[in-house]
Image 1 (spheres, rainbow, N blue to C red):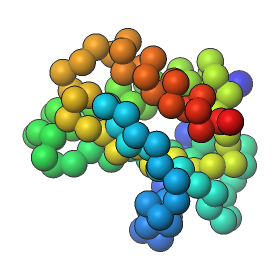
Image 2 (spheres, rainbow, N blue to C red):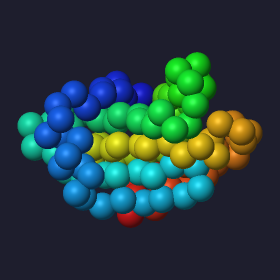
Image 3 (tube, rainbow, N blue to C red):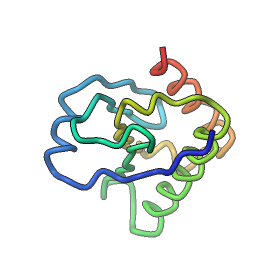
Image 4 (cartoon, rainbow, N blue to C red):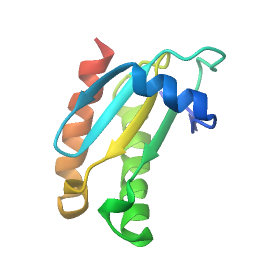
Length: 114
């Protein structure tokens, strides 16, 4: 199933997601929860990389990787579209293989689905 990915836009959305459930691994922390006034047909997800990780080039590389992984995830596994997601990247994501990161994040989204 191909779904359109939408980014979170309002500060209140970020704050409310940070108060909800989270799941963490060595590559990223994923906050998730139900937001009001959200389109249930689209995947609401935002990616955050902290300045501590590196310069803009490194941070954008991580965000590109995450976007690519989520595009694949929306096609390959069923993601709960009732939830909104906030993915905060960790510095370990920069130096590891794309394949390992993808497998780990797929496992985490499968845990959330249940």
